Image 1 (tube, rainbow, N blue to C red):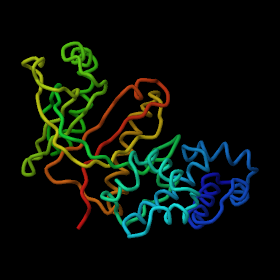
Image 2: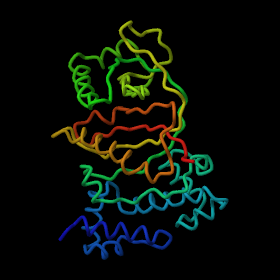
Image 3: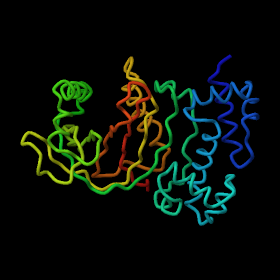
Image 4: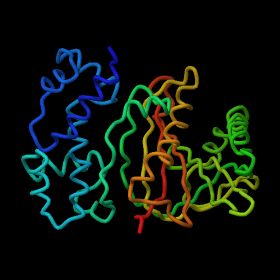
Length: 299
């Protein structure tokens, strides 16, 4: 029995019946398992409880409806939410703001459903890639340590891991926090825009600061411009066998090879993308981080 195919059948059924009543018992029958077995294994394969996944997919379709003139309560009712407040609460939990505020970000394309075979190809295990949430973040300052590298001849793929090893081995993270005492804990790994003729770019590991007053001379000082970001959270992964690093790499491949082509968005010109590592990446098991991609709607 191919478990992946069994669970994919239930995922496909959910997509076809989003405006109808869906139960765990029905989905378990489609997959060919008992409800208890299905419930436990669905969480393992997809990364969230089955009914939470159903709500997430209903919300993903409801988001597209926000691009129309439909009333929010009508959209909520269509996708199984009994009250406006219940819909807004679920919406805010996933997307970080109210449906009313989200209308300006809306693409007319429905985010893709879970494709277990695709995630296996991308070496993403222990949970799905959630569709991104969208946030508008004001400009902020960053101080840290910089690497000058280039995309040409894949040099950055060698330089950046070596730079991280240097950052860890020489205690540069501790130096940043000791010297700058930032209000927010979390490291920003920023790729400043490349020279499109030479491929050269600056990669910075740093922290967010109010100003540059406490920065040492050898530290990089820069600003990240205001932008609207699609924020992707990597699936939980362990540090053993480089699983966390593979989850980050797989998520990046998913964003640029799978998500962008059908998203209705494109990379925002003149903006910068970055990775964000906070306390959630400190545990040896179940570590996650965020990838922030600046976006604008495609014309």
